[in-house]
Image (cartoon, rainbow, N blue to C red; front, side, top):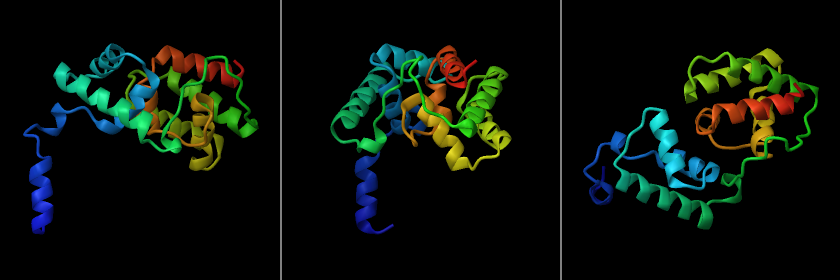
Amino acid sequence: LDEDQVTLLNISFTGRKNDEIPDYRHLTTLVQIYSRDEQIEKILEKNGNKYDPHILHERIKQARHWVMNYAPESSRFHILDENSPVNLNEDGKKVICNLMANIKSLETWNAEAIHEAARKAIQQSSVSPSEGFSYIYRVFIGKDRGPRLGFFLEGMERDKVEKRLSFSCGA
């Protein structure tokens, strides 16, 4: 590291371990799903993450500010209503129906398992990964791209995800 990099590193060091600070990228997703800090805290705790409340609420405030004032449009989203229509071709419906079946069979609701369920649904549907993920994002946010899928869906209530998939699949 050169002298400037060392100076920047020293300035940015907070004295906390990374596992004591909520992941900022994940929080920018959660603040777009939930309007209240308590909801975000509950989701994080449910997924095994416990943070100092003062640090967590400050970090949530920063994430909301960034999303509202600085995030590019491509990083912003809103969750579509459960019964919002979505335009999918046959390949898209196949991906979504396969994902619905895979999600329902999950024993644990975590980012890794959800991402694997999506990857498997896309593979079962014989479409390219980019096309398959695009179908999934369209169902939830009406866009072809979105936040890291496993963490995104993990941050939502499982029942809500299943209902949205079921509606979009036509089941």
